[in-house]
Length: 94
Image (cartoon, rainbow, N blue to C red; front, side, top):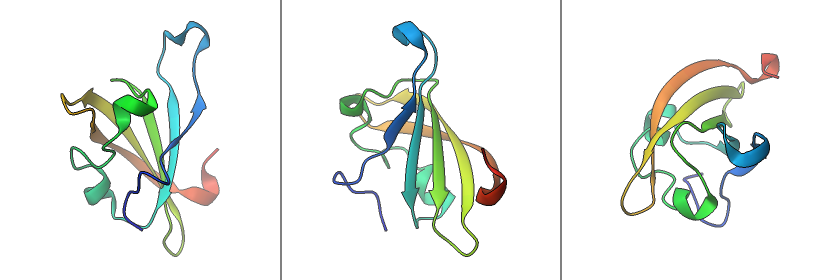
């Protein structure tokens, strides 16, 4: 399913003191090339995302695949600009 404000990424990890990158988790059926488009996560600033954060995207495909993205920046409108990361089978992800 496409990104929905009703189903935003959830924050899974934040370093103590909010000094390091946070880790976010998001499930969906969109291809990674769609997720990597600037503005896909349109409410990133409202969620508390910041540059350097990691987004673990679980693509609900057969088999499910885990894709890693990094927040390159937050746009003036508050959306995330994600950069492509590595992909690995979700079954092997920790």
